[in-house]
Amino acid sequence: MPQTTSWTSKHLLDLESLTAEQIAFVLDTADTFAEVSTRSVKKVPALRGKVVVNAFFEDSTRTRTSFALAASRLSADVIDFSEKGSSVSKGETLIDTARNIEAMGIDAIIIRHQAAGSAALLARTVKCSVINAGDGAHEHPTQGLLDLYTIRKRFGRVEGLKVAIVGDIANSRVARSDLWGLTRLGAEVILVGPPTLLPRAFERLATGPGRVRVVHDFDAVCGEVDVINMLRVQNERMKSAQFPTVREFTRWFGLTWDRFQRCKPDVFVMHPGPMNRGVEIHNEIADGPNSGILKQVEYGLAVRMAVLYLTMQAE
Amino acid sequence: MGNTLETPMTRLVESMADQIISGLGGPTDLVLVGIRTRGDVLANRIEPLLRERGVTKLDRGTLDITLYRDDLSEIGPLPLVKPTVMDCDIGGRPLVIVDDVIFTGRSVRAALDALTDFGRPRVVRLAVLVDRGGRELPIHPDFVALRLPDLPPTQRVSVRLTETDNADQILVESR
Image (cartoon, rainbow over all chains, first blue to last red):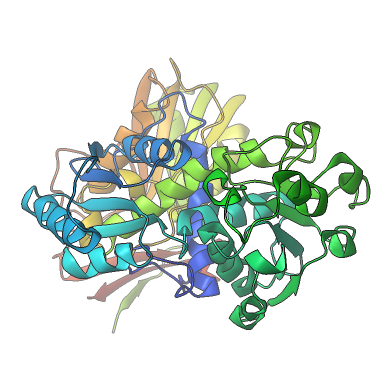
């Protein structure tokens, strides 16, 4: 049994630059870490003595908690770093932060920041591992990985599946990470949203072997897809001119009960959270048997353990 | 380059089983735990032999010790970590760890650490196919099928098994 693939990168900045083999390697490793969480002692000493910094410049419950828990299950120490109230401009803040963190002798920085490219900037500045927990509208690679993992758990594969990603695609880092990961593993991605929030140019992002289609009519495709990933309607963007009214959005792009009846009976429904119940997703669908939403959260822990372990052990 | 030791593997595995039985005084209850990868394959072969020799309540476990190693940063590109499987209760029972080769003793130390996360066996014993000497820790096997003279660290002992490597072989080669 020769080991053909392995992991060598100390950072996880995006899914765009990963090969299908590298993505599969992370998902396979996550399978192992899922077992750790079923033990009575839910902890392994793999990262004992290492320190991880959770540097979140934007709000988060799920991702931040999930990363902290993942680090603690690997026996690493977790420190919360916040820059609330800082008046320094973005670029300077990041570099300053990076220097402070380096001086403290830290082994990994998990960063969420409103500026696209901030994780990559940090990776160029510091010597420790950098894990992107969401940078602007660019990428959210661990969300992409946990979505892939959840789909693979449900169907036993990703290749050949039709996956709809619905909502505000243009402003979504989750959509981008999902898009790269899904197409690389051979799924067909159907992006669904109003033209103002979904430029045609997204069709050119496919890198194969999977394909990407851009569709502005949810009803035209809802019956053919295996997976529907509903993106969050971001309240802060609802007032912008790109956005229809909330009621209009729900009517055309929400997963309503009526629309759900026209989907495949075993369609798998996902949502990265936090949900706006009754806006992009109907209450009973979110809690029903087709929903994988809580599984996403559960599997996210195993995926983040795998990511921390692989990046922090890499040379 | 290397040296193949021509001892029938079947006889060595039988020797491990026999030593386990006599060493534990003819047990009827036992947990047999293999260290991935080849220790686990050996445990699979030993299991039916132990049943033939009167172990009626026999449970199997599999340990992947990668996460417990103290030399993780020195082993180069990360191998894929595979799941540990310990579905049985190990508390209060005799337990035998099986590995293919014992060298520094660090793998066994890691295995002992991993086991403590699953419970407290009554007694833990260690069975290996090959002891090549060179211990760096105060850890010694209880049951040894093949004892080689202390080999220098420049020599590598590799066990190949049909299930994983398409042949039963013990190889001694220079690194």
